[in-house]
Image (cartoon, rainbow, N blue to C red; front, side, top):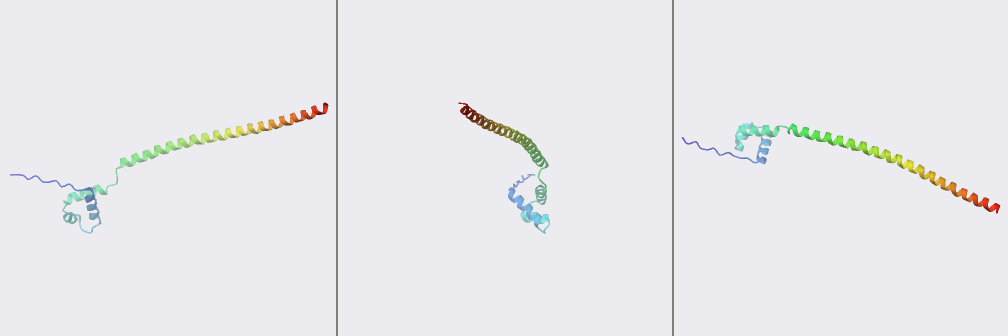
Length: 124
């Protein structure tokens, strides 16, 4: 007996997806929809199971881990920036105070020198 080799049909992803949508959205039994499409009922059931399952859990976990790592990094960076800002505020206040005292000292020196000039002018 010669066994005929069965030809394996390869269906496109678009065809599989539209078949699943048709089977799920139709009032007909899945076996009837499969016959109408010219597909084996078991194949259509497999496609439905495949397309109905949620995405892989591991990808979700990786995404969550990635977001958690990003959050940790951003919190660390935020703390560093707050520290830098506070240091700059203190430095600005210090130099502003020093500048005020320097300006005050210059004014005092000007007044002293003008007083000396007046005193020197009176004695001469």
